[in-house]
Amino acid sequence: MAYLSPSILTADFSDLKSQLEKLEEGGADFAHLDVMDGSFVPNITFGQPVVRSIAAATKLPLDVHLMVVRPELCLAEFALPETEFITVHQEACLHLHRTVQQIKALGKKAGVALNPATSLSTLEYMLEDIDMVLLMSVNPGFGGQKFIESTWEKIKKLDAMRKVRHPEMLIELDGGVNLNNASALKEAGVDVFVAGNAVFSAEDMVQRVKDFQVILK
Ligand code: DX5
Ligand code: ZN
Image 1: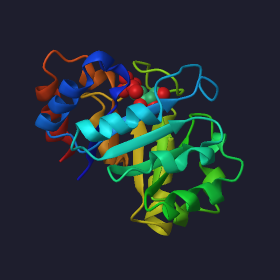
Image 2 (image 1 turned 120 degrees about the vertical axis):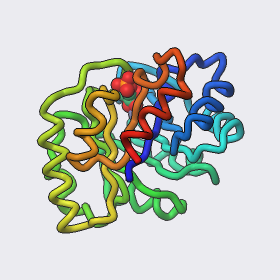
Image 3 (image 1 turned 60 degrees about the vertical axis):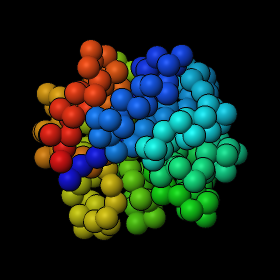
Image 4 (image 1 turned 135 degrees about the vertical axis):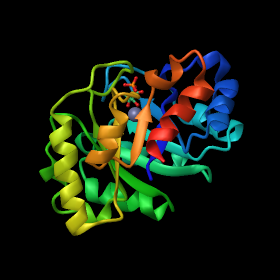
């Protein structure tokens, strides 16, 4: 059983509510919200006010992906009742262990994201503390990029690590996911699938979400 978390990064932002409704109708599990600050990544998306509005506009639990420097400064405002996961980047945290504990103290599941070049060994001393590891399969900042092939090995290694040390920990994959690679990614160990372009570029988004769920469920 795996989960679909469509990323609204490539949505039509002037029409978010109706697009969120389509995700619900198709049976998406979460709404993946890419918060970007123009500093950690070369792109700016949206912040707390928009996330609050999205929370009010959808029944989908929120999967908040913070691509911001010093995320510890803004965690509380993203810990809404509708928030399921708050994910921070390992590369953006000076004190990752402390930040993960702060997310948990806010009553939320803590995710840690790794950029493609960041080693799994950076999590060696805190794997048991993390609810979800998000592996970036593209460099963060933009939707619609090509899947980086070295991610396959990383997923398999992380899957082996968590089976021994923390079997309940989820593996989320973000970047270049599509209907062609989803089945093999699931087989490799991915539990939560982020899909931006693959969902929002579809002519029939509801059907596209359903097509994903046939593979993931
Ligand atoms: C990239 C974001 C992703 C992005 C994925 O920095 O974290 O969530 O929306 O987009 P696709 O699925 O188009 O690669
Ligand atoms: Zn993301």
